[in-house]
Length: 349
Image (tube, rainbow, N blue to C red; front, side, top):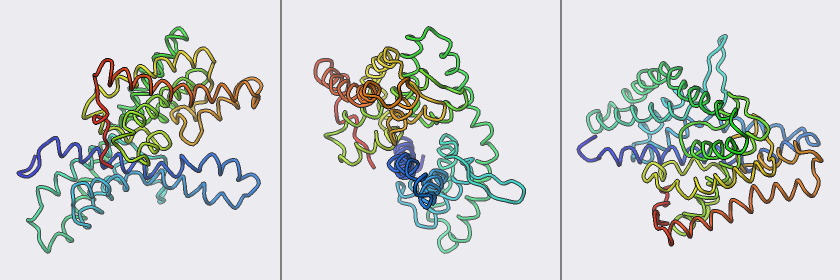
């Protein structure tokens, strides 16, 4: 990679930077979005807060780019230039009819690719530009790396479309099998650079399919949080399931075996979702318990609405079962069948 950095360190800097950026951007919405949506009807003035949360999501590219720059120890000029290039290539910035719009979070895969190229360019030029760094790095990264990333964005975003085609095929299977497989797939996707919300919307995942997809995400969130509870700061562990399990991406890449306890958890939650007929919408699928989007939508869509039975079901499948199963599989896979250790789940945030 470079004389002072090997390929593994380079990749982990990129992934850890993305993980930090993702959680910084998504945490405000995860904690506040549903609360303010409920309040805005009575207090319209709170709309400004909802707008701020939406804006936060659309700035994921620049935040991830800056976070990656900090991981590499780049100078402020290099770091902010990398943030601009990454954001341009994210796809969240749309130029239309002479206006610039922000839409969605962008494509994380393209952010990773663009930031990787940008970081490599900075490393290759490190120490060679001296006082000319301010004149060279910002335009080079934005006009060359950022624009190149923007040009390949339509092709890279097709990866998400292909995954969506595969997910859609699962929805025609026998319901119990579909529930298990969708829970597994979404548990894995939420830990990857692929957007679960984008996939759910692309294939119009609703009803039981949406519900079990959310349970798979719960398995990933609670699973990685509980497995790493003793080796990570508690705030980090809470952020994994309250914000986004995607911040555990570096852990998964470093050791794929860390997914085994989560996969076992997701399979059982998928069956529970089928048994209790957990519901959701295309818009709610992909969130899990983040912002209470999953459980609230299940209660609202179930027959009887906010009755005791539906509330208890939501508590069982979204909190009690995933937490209990995570503890059980932690014991099984670290003690009885020691395939992983708690140290494997350590995050560098």
